[in-house]
Each structure stands twice: as structure tokens, then as C-alpha cells.
Length: 175
Image (cartoon, rainbow, N blue to C red; front, side, top):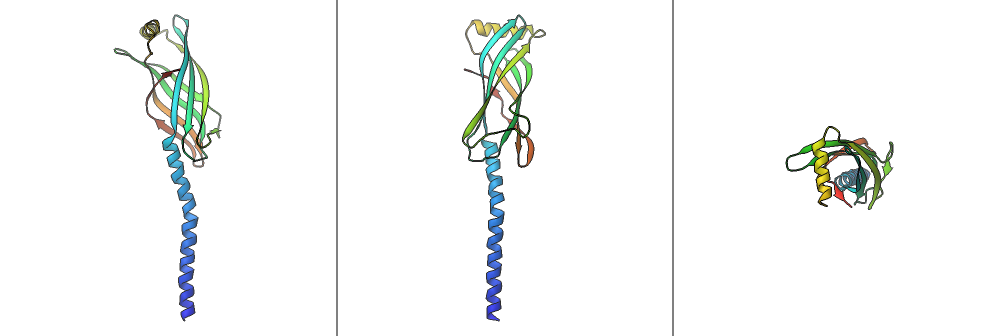
């Protein structure tokens, strides 16, 4: 009887340990995944702005997404946002932008690294003369143009499938 009772106790302990070890790895992976998604950083900069005509502007953009965690498995498919001009009396959406990094399954972003993509954006300001005048005024005064990225979404592909990650609104930085 005593051997049988010890066998049952040791068997129960062994099964418990195996269950904990088996379940710990996926749980740790999910925690790393959610931490990796939460810690993704985004920076979009403007390297040049050129008026092609009176009502056409060409913006050279550079989008950088950084993974500051040790999680490996995030693949960036695209970056989407609305480019807005927000001045004292004007709040105007100029363009909806989608920057493709790589078609599905996306471009792998390694741990503690970043990926960048250049994008030339051609904006038609023909119906937005006031915006064109504001942009020209900022250029003439050598001031930073108040461009903002709003409604930002990072399109990623992971072991869970494709996901859209919302991101906070950002000013468009100049290089």
C-alpha cells in the first residue's frame, strides 16, 4: 500500500511539473508578443518638400519602425496614415498614405533593430488653395510646416495572423 501511495504522489507531482513546463513556453511567448507589439516605435520624417506646380507638392518621406524588444516574429506589411495640415485656422486632410514594406507575410523586424522605407508622396492641392498658401508661407519664413500623421495603423503579420495595430498621432518631423 505504501509503495502505491508514494507512486501516486510522485506521479501527480511529475504530471504537474510536466504540465507547467509545457504551458509555460506558449504563455511566455504570448507575453513577449504583446510586449513586442506594445513597444514598437514609429518615426516618419520628411527629407524634402518640392512644389512641382502651383498646386502640386512632392514630399519625400522616410518611415522607420523599431522593435526595441527581444521578440522575434513580427513582420511589417504596411503603414497607413492620413497626412494633415493643422494650422491656426486650418485643419485639412491632404492625403491618405499606405507605405508597403513587403507583401504578406511581411518584412521581418529583428529583435533590437529597425526597418525603414522611403516613400515619395505626390499631393494635389488644386482644391486646397489655402493649404498651398500656408505651406508656401512656412517655407518662405523657414519654419517647420505643421504636418501631422493621424489615424495611424501598422499592418503586421504574426503567428496569430494579420493584425492592424493603432498608433498615436505624430507630427511629421523634418530631417
